[in-house]
Image 1 (cartoon, helix red, strand yellow):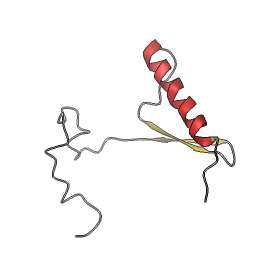
Image 2 (cartoon, rainbow, N blue to C red):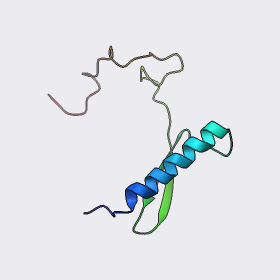
Image 3 (cartoon, one colour):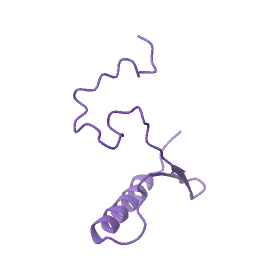
Image 4 (tube, rainbow, N blue to C red):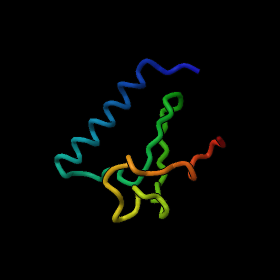
Length: 79
């Protein structure tokens, strides 16, 4: 499956719009939501994102750096 040549520009415009909304303090940001775009149908799907209570980065008083996180027990690929 190929990528439409216009797709990176479309996504870039959406990202720039979100940045401007953030900087100007206007509109509703996509914070906590994943926006998926299907260029073949020109449709958008929003998926709410939830924090993982076991994630050392996502928790309210989470760590500042992921350098010290041990992912060996979280990896879905068996070693």
